[in-house]
Image (tube, rainbow, N blue to C red):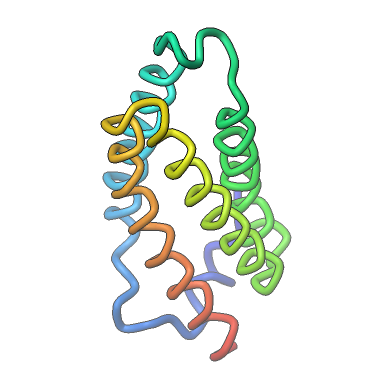
Length: 129
């Protein structure tokens, strides 16, 4: 668990959503990500494994570590770097998935959009705390 008081005391953007929004958005985004991955894994152009999966796995690994870095370790600048890395690998994933299955790549657009928003929120915290 993370220090809720620490997070509550941070200066946050007026665009920062209430906590319950994250509980709705992230399951939807993860569902879209896994549907995209499933489509790619089942495509004959990428049966079992193909190079674009490396980008997907890398962005996912950084994504899964972001919460730990930001909330538990309270390393907001490092978390911002992680967000940047996630965005880069997600863009590479979208581009390379597009060559295999356009629909699978399009499923990642809402995730990428949310990542840019998360980058803004994280940047605001870095600049104002």
